[in-house]
Length: 289
Length: 308
Image (tube, rainbow over all chains, first blue to last red; front, side, top):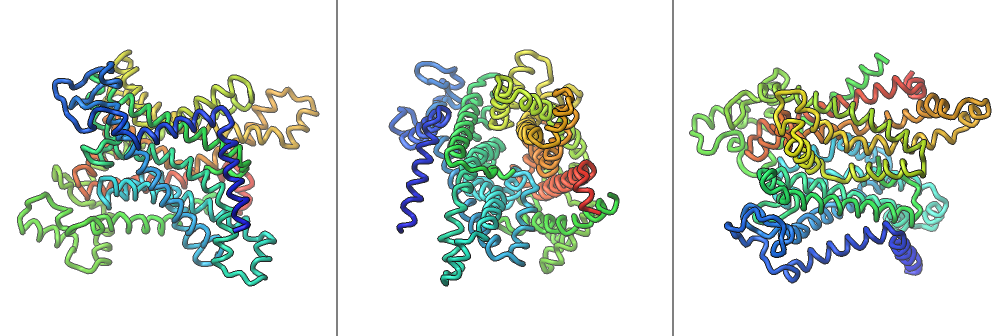
């Protein structure tokens, strides 16, 4: 445990350092506010996300409905807050699964090498050359539309990126003297992988996971826009824009605000990620491209 | 070069087979009886028998795959459940639309991306650089379907410059190409900028400066040429995003392409069409990547030398 404590302290200061840059702090405040809004949505708004009010449909933004209402007269701000729950949690959980699986796959491929490594590399390179949206659509075709389908699709679509990155990190570290020293002291493979290699490869992979969460929010919104994401009446940013398309000329605010929310959130994630990269001083390209 | 091209083409065969197995498996992985997935709800027993015989659904799985692959290679992709038309006709009509759109978007984002990247690199740290890189960040973080909808609102509804949707006229291509291209410009501009800055710090550039060559000429003649190699590499590697972007943007602009067809089929559970669209899109990505690799080999003497 003595080796863990300073490392954690280092990471905490990195996040604090990232928050010290002006872009970092703006991005961080937006992200925290967004998460709080998603969590406390029922307290923050007096409307229910599925309360229909047909006479009040297509109302433009006003004092009663800050962002207007949709085709069923539902309050858009309320739906955006609840939509944030779906969009953020689906993207974050999917990337969490993806990064965990990718790290295990990439670390074992990079560490053990040989035939296993070649097999993993082949599959990863294969999916890597396909656009994420295509991989995701293939998965949705199999699993079917909905939250589970979207989550799995996003997780698989980004798996290649994390596997590649972790593998490259492990390959670079595994020749270091301290790994050799640990091995000569009798450390087992799994001890070396979990206590030396993965912790040292962690920072760039986590930063890239953070940036990928931004891309995942876009992918989730795109699938939602296609009508393949969370099914009604559950609100999601993409789903809201999907139903808003038909009313593009009549009530443009229905698609305007959810799209703006996606854009600002993704920009915030990118800016915070960049600030984090600067704070951690990671030279390696964390984006993988 | 010819040998390299042929070798790469042969290497595509196992990749194609792997992709085809996954796409074939869709029908079997979705919950329920595959016969149901290939038929309209409420079809009679004779139609069930016909489909079973046609796809060999009562035979072992590998035989079914071989039958499916054989049909595919002879141009038989089955019949659409909705509308009962041969799938090959549907995708055959859609494919050219998608390819034209993707090709133009690729061209647009390459030309403008390199231009903006060069300007940003030349004006490094200045206002122009920050404006371009800021715009580029914005372009890559906005969902493309949303951008498309905004462009429709601005240019088709408010200004009336372009048609809202459809593919009857060439002017209908402007907004879709712009929408896909803006995302691509971001990638190309970023890579070009970094590559230009990196290349301008090389020894040969210092030598050219020492020789007294005008700085602008050094940048455009020598540095840019050097910087184009990583740009082509990244383009070759990620050529698929254009097709991915096309899928999304086609739906927004209601263009008759593979993307529109695929999304409609997915929502209608029309699995033969879903399979055909995914297969064609995957093949287009594979061939596009191959084309990019060949282009890269043709441009970079070092890659060419390594191949010989």
